[in-house]
Image (cartoon, rainbow, N blue to C red; front, side, top):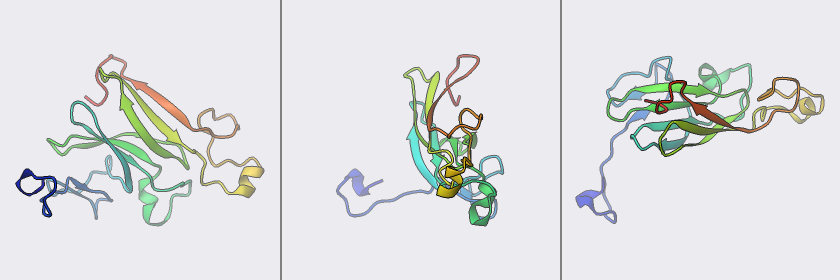
Length: 163
């Protein structure tokens, strides 16, 4: 919030909503650690839907198994839904290996969501790719080259996504 409500003010105040990380390093706005079901790293995309839910997308790089190193506990990239009023953060989806979850929007009635899965298998070396070892089989899982895709998501009950 800019001083005096003036967007040109040289001073402002802010609050942290969440610090991403594992149970040892994460902090929610209530001061708690993120639960295992909602821990994340490398937030990259964020979108606020008409009901004020924050959709957080991660980009930990083009990672594939084995998931080791400092980001090992986080698995693949994911998208989470956060409620700024309560501080609750829930994992909504995880993507295939070597991808980035990017771009999200809903229809005006919020009953259909579109989410992009970008460059699955992107961690594959040139040698492995040439040999047909793609590092991911998304979305066909039939041995073909992995493809980026746009997911179309809706609830079975026809309700709002994330509600």
